[in-house]
Image 1 (cartoon, rainbow, N blue to C red):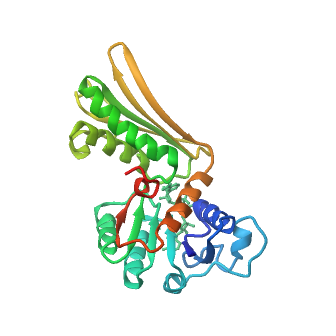
Image 2 (image 1 turned 45 degrees about the vertical axis):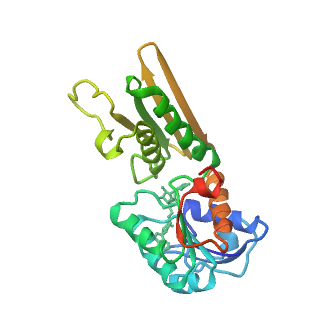
Image 3 (image 1 turned 180 degrees about the vertical axis):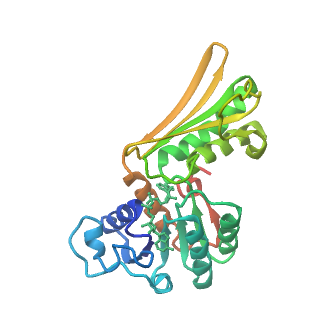
Length: 266
Ligand code: NAD
């Protein structure tokens, strides 16, 4: 399978290049970056920390989609929405790891999914996708005597908060309880907030250092606390998941899929 990487010089982009180069059945179709990016024109092998390949980071996104069976996108929400249209126009599959997607961005991906296979997941690791199921199941079993709080920590460069994974965990817990996260989500607390509202799902985001990603779902009641925690110690797990998703897209019917579909958990 020919796989293209948009955002190939980003933290995840470089990991994805390395993952493709070391995975059987994958061929690197190319990589793009934003105009004026310092990596423009650099060899993709070098960006992956490997030997030169003779393929360089370019700026022609259309040409990258034309040359790819699947494109992997870990960029930024507005870019991702545009890549959705390009994938749909060409019938090229799209794997989206970008987080911080708003309603309009998700709508663009939904539209693309009518014409091609789109896998979108805020977290591509096996462990987190298992955790989503455990959070849903625990919330369903424990009822709202148990206060649900979601705690996450990421590196200092992360631009969105709470993380997409934290929000996905909140959605899973809300689903387990049969409520909507929009109605019960408490995304920040500051000042004189008053006591905790029964049934709320709270979020707290920590930022610092080089933390690849840590998430805990906490169920706290009088006398006990259940805490489900996932810690990623390397971004390589996200890259491996994304490449697995890209391979899974081969000959896939158009549709919007999650990582839980790719992993056979759905
Ligand atoms: P980063 O800023 O290091 O990399 C993003 C790259 O995309 C940058 O190099 C930027 O120049 C490039 N880019 C932006 N728009 C582009 C466009 N239109 N065309 C080509 N290149 C473009 O960020 P990062 O740490 O690699 O994370 C990227 C995204 O992936 C974030 O939203 C992050 O939260 C998310 N992420 C998701 C997972 C997951 O498992 N789903 C894991 C880690 C990070």
